[in-house]
Image (cartoon, rainbow, N blue to C red):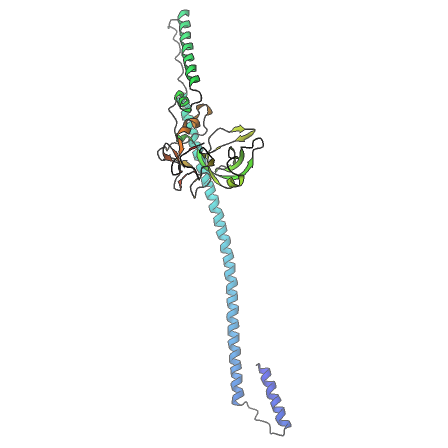
Length: 331
């Protein structure tokens, strides 16, 4: 009830008393009306205070919303800077690995360069024609023996490795990395081949041709992680250039890609505890390194991929496995 309503009600009561012939009341307020007015004023003061508190709360809420928006922008900016720093560190690490591999390859090449022949002394007597012809026959005989040995052993990886000048290579020469399959499509000229685009941590995805079309649908490969051999020389497979090799577990019934451990990311290196060497920048196809190592690559009874009983491992994240195959081979 407002003051205007109380005043109107008092005037109405006064008019009724005058018309009824009663004497007008004392113009002063009676205690009851005075108490009503005091209660009303007290109520209005409380309402004004509550309204002021509500307005202050609204202003504070708006201020907090503005501050939260600024904090969110600052957090987004810090995240962007952190991601940029991580990307630069990854690129720098990759460049260092490539440089180390290049230096190793150069040192290996220099060590294989034969020493220059000694200059012939002017005082050295000339050999007779008979001696020259006999030496030529011996060379031809030796070459014939080597060709016979090479022809008898053609097609077996171990014998090919034995004919190399270098000792038998180990798994550390391979650049094995984790890759994410970004896209899968059928090969235009083969029903048994897939063409996959795979992120292996480089600046651009690599195109990889695999023999998985007869073993699983493309949607089962899409956006999955795999293990790839990345330092093979690019080759054309039915007209499509393949820039890496997908490592698969195989048995008599099926073939499936090896699975990296949980938490692995594209570009992570697959390592071996007892073979800590650096990978070559690019494998020489003439040395058949992959073919030499293939007989020692196995899937053990637990489904773990191994080389000479040493597990494929992503350091700090776990072991690489075959999803369903055990006691099988690797291709």
